[in-house]
Length: 466
Image 1: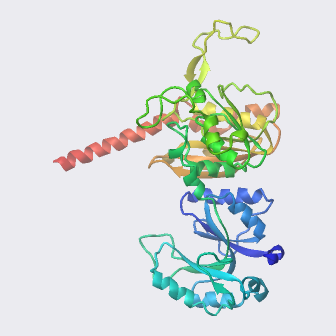
Image 2 (image 1 turned 135 degrees about the vertical axis):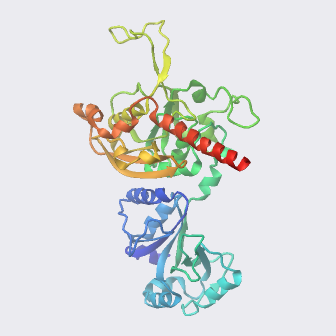
Image 3 (image 1 turned 180 degrees about the vertical axis):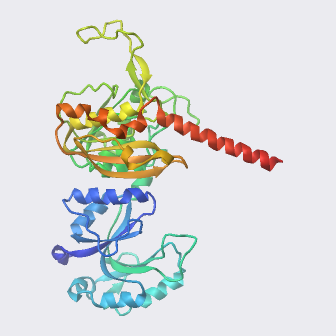
């Protein structure tokens, strides 16, 4: 591998997973940004394609990205490509011999794999494709079990499973560099998690959010709606110290009814700390506490490298904050009377996002990122609806469809300046908050859509019944 040190301007091929399509580009860009590298695609780049060719990277850059990415399957040093096998052959024969030779010498071992996207090939067809590449000057020995070098022939048959072409749209050949971290989706599955709740975040999305937030070694990451701590688990995997708050006493302390099937009550050891202990990350756990996100308890300082959260939408988890129905709830000195017991009040979505962005502007370090989910009613959604803040730059906006009429957007923002006095009032004149004004607007639209769909289903059943 001595030759890899000189590989500063080679082209690399990334094989992307075809789930979470909207999240792939921001994730790869964020992971490259951790290396201070730009996202520089080659040729006719198509975001929805399963194969991306990137330039201006080193092999170390690629390995670093693949050590974290859950959206990328594999990465290769690209040696040749073409629309046909004839074009691929010409491309490979034009590849600099000095770049190939270190991996083809006598005494070395190798293996060639054939990957096809959107089509399954018979084993015999795969062997024929490998045999047809005998023009490559391999001098080493074939080793299927433990090769020193792995090469891959990758064929792209498009993305439409109902219209698979006879011949591939594009063909690539390259040297395998590294695999992505798709295994994390299985090994961190919520099904096997020690402590879970009704809305525990899916493992794959948790790691995507941690990557969008660029959580890294020794960062301090905070979740103001921590729930059962799925996002903290993902961030701790990448070496970040984690902490959080939640208004739900029972969730924070692991008490009350269990969310597991056939289990009535939570056990005494079901808590967020136990989740991190399960994955060997307990030393990254700072603490969690019962706190109202609308009334921050933190001193006025930039404390967190990232804020990553999934606020409640009022669907499966209620949107609550502390308050009082009394006219006078505070004494003149701002302190509550000893006999005062806070009660629960509705926490409007507009207020949740206003408070979240304001809190992030005050408590993120410069360059720190806020990553959160924004629920939307799809028929009414437009990009202008995404809340903004003068101190936060919108980095990415990705959609996860929930139903025909609802979805949620994964919003990533970066702090670009410290807040000034007028910044705290900016949202009052910002039309982007209008769609979230009013009591639980998203919740009402959500259930309104369900009722309409249910009505259609009832009508259909009546017709079919006749």
